[in-house]
Structure formats: C-alpha cells, structure tokens
Image 1 (cartoon, rainbow, N blue to C red):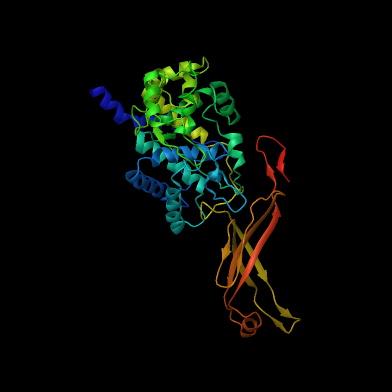
Image 2 (cartoon, rainbow, N blue to C red):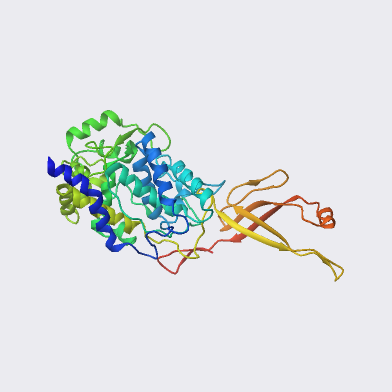
Length: 424
C-alpha cells in the first residue's frame, strides 16, 4: 500500500521530468508568454478547474477537442471557429457536433486573458493548455506545454472526414492515419488511452452489437449484452435517438491505464479501440500499457506534446484571434484631405476589425461570406469615426459617423504536406 501511495505522489514529478528533455519543437517554446502575459496559463487552469468541478465530462471533452483540432489543419484553433451561413465549419461536422463540448471554457479563459493581455495569447495555445490541465485534473498527468502557436483563419467541415480516424478503423488504418501526422504506432496506442475517460454515442459502436457472430474485433459476450440494454438497435446518429455510454467502465472519471486492461478483457467499446489488441502491430503495446500504468502516464505526456506540435502556425503566420470562435482581420485606413496648399487636415486614421460574421452597429451593417463554391470570401466590419479637432471636417464628413468596411478576396488553401492547392 505504501508503494502505491508513493507512486501517486511522484507521478506528477516524474511526468514533468520526462518531458523536460524535449521542451521545444516546431518553433514552440515552453514559457512563451512568460514576459508578454505571465498569468496566461494560470488563467486557463483556473477556468478548466472551475468547469470540471461543475461537470467532470469537460475533462475528456477538452482533451478530445485538442486532438480534433490538431488532426485537421494542424493545431491552429480551427475547430473553435463557428460556422457561417452556407459555410459549415469543423465544429459542426457530425464527428464533432453535438459530441464536442467545452467551447465555453476556452472562450471564458480567452476573455479573461484578453482583458489583461490583448491580442497576445492564441486560442490554439489556450486549447493546448486546457487539454494539459484536463489531464492533470483527471489523472495527475502534468507536463510543460511548448507554446507560440498562431490561430488559423480557415475551418472547413469536409476536412474532418478527410483527417480524423473513424471509430471503425482497424489498426493498420489507424497507424497510417497517425503516420500522416508524424506520430508513431506507439504514440497512437498511447494517446488512445485518453479513452479512459469520457463517453461515446451508441451510434459509434452499435453496429458491433447487432452483427452476426463472430465479431471482428471480438467483444466479451456479457459486455455486449449489457450494452444492448443501453443501446437499442434503432439508435440514430443523425440527430435522432442516440444515448451515450462511458468508454471505460472500470474508471470512467479517471485518466489511467484501466482502458488497456479493458481491452485485454475484450471490453473495448469502439472497433478502433479493440483493434489495437487484435493486431500484431500494436498488441504488445497494449499489454505493456496495461501492466505499467506509471510508464504509460509518462508516455502519454510526451505524446501529447508531440501531437500539440502538428503543423502549427508560428511567427507571422495566421493571427491572434480576439474571440476564439471568430476570424479577426485588422484593417487600417488613413485619410488625407487638402485643398491645394490652402487647407490641409491632420491624417484621419480609421481602424476596423473585419470578422467572419455579420457586423452591425447603429447605422451600418454588413454580412460576411466564408469560402463559397467559387472559393471567394468576404470579411466585414463597421468602423466608428469620431469627431476631430476641425470644425470644417466635422461638418463636411458629418462626424461622428459609421463606415462599413469589407474585404473581398479569393482564398488560397495550400496543403502543408505538399505543394498542391485545394482551392485557388
């Protein structure tokens, strides 16, 4: 008993030490906001702890959200962007909606950070911090998060299908999918341990319950019978009747290695889970993780850091969003008025924030358009121009006044893994 208690106390320290040997990757740096926004990570952790104390399901939700973000367009916060009319975003893809939760936690943390450090901390970094804090809160797994990510401006629903692994994938398909993101088979098995917490909709696995025997991959008969009482054959994943079931029945609220012990008992909920034990390529990794919980925790922390560096935007790429669900684009205009050499005003500077949503004020309004079928986009914003210290110009321009600014453009989307263009 004393050995077990000691292991729990040392777990956090061991995990942090194990990750510290490789703290930077893909231009990301631990302590990136140490000078520019020193309280950023503490603010995120506070928001996450508050949310989990109210709803323990937020912990697996935020870990999953980070995974879904990184596997589609890289870790750029694109999963946080809301859809606009005619332009569905990642978060509204069936793989994410309605199952992906916790957006309000990211927005709350972002609002607090913006009040202290405007336009400094990216939403992509906030999500990476939140995933780490969720792992710590639910499993005592702590690690340093390299930061410096920038936020992307594009979110396309169809790319979710092209990039996320399906719950019906076999081990070979999973290995190929993770390899495309630069992750190894061992990292695949390690990160799958996140299924130790959280729930799954019946529609994601009910096909396993009502198919002729023998099942492939196999499922324990008692477990299958139990699931049938929770998931009838008429479940509908298209917005109809679709109950949820905990993925790991052993410790559903604790991020630990019991998930792998469940696989060894043929109690993996998803086909993609149980396939890890059925395949010769990954079975030994499952057995090892089931036997060595502390070692798995260390590997999980390392794998989360590796995943968090997938195709990140850094430096001048992307942007720092002020609202995580919206695309922001600063538009600055300078107006000069003169009548020959007789009369000249001071420059009139107008700053407008263009967004991927309808912009409306007292007098002006405009509607955006995000990536239509011809790859055209439009961002809009309403600028308020205050009075200036010039009676003539105030009268001539009827200041104060509102102006509608819009930016129309053709968006070029370039695959990071090749030189081919998806749109032009």
